[in-house]
Image 1: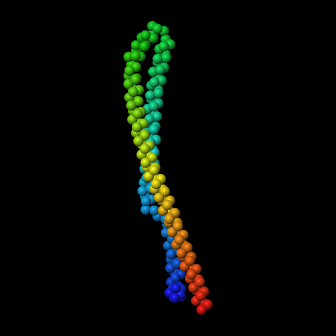
Image 2: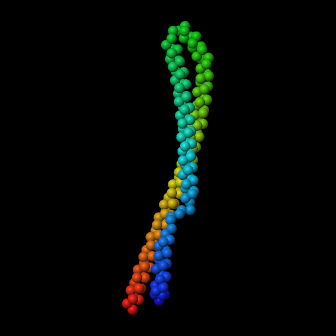
Image 3: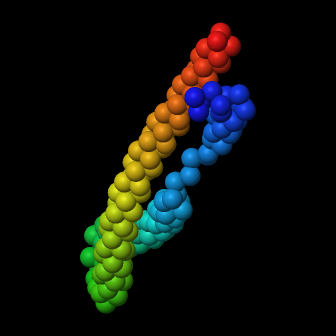
Length: 172
C-alpha cells in the first residue's frame, strides 16, 4: 500500500532518479600518500643516477691513471739502459704520488658504491611500499565498482517493481 501511495505521488521514481544521478567519482583516501611515494621514488632514482655517474667518473679516472703508469713503465723498458736508469729514477721518485692518487680515488669509489647500494635499498623499500599501496587501491576500486553495480541493480529492481505496481494499480 505504501508503494502504491508513493507511486501515485511520484516520490518513488524521484528517489530512484536521484540515486542514479548521484553516482560518485571514485576517491581513494590514500591517493595522496601514493603520489608522494611515486615522487619519492623518482627523486631517489635521479639521485641514484647522479651517484652512479660520479662512480663511473671516478672509476674512469682510476683506469686512466693506471694506464698512464703502465705506459710509462712500458716506455721505460723499451729504452737503452743508460737512458732508462735516469728516467727510471724520476719515475720511481714520483710513482708513489700517482699510487696515492689512485688509492684516494679507490677510497672515493668505495664510498660512492656504498652510497649507491644504500640508495638502491631505499628505492626497493619505497617501491615495495608503493606496490602495496597500488594493490590496495586496485582492491578499493574493485569494491567501489561492485558497490556501484549493486546500487545500479537495486535501482533497476526498484524501477521494475514500480512499473509492475503501476500495472497492477491500473488494472484494478
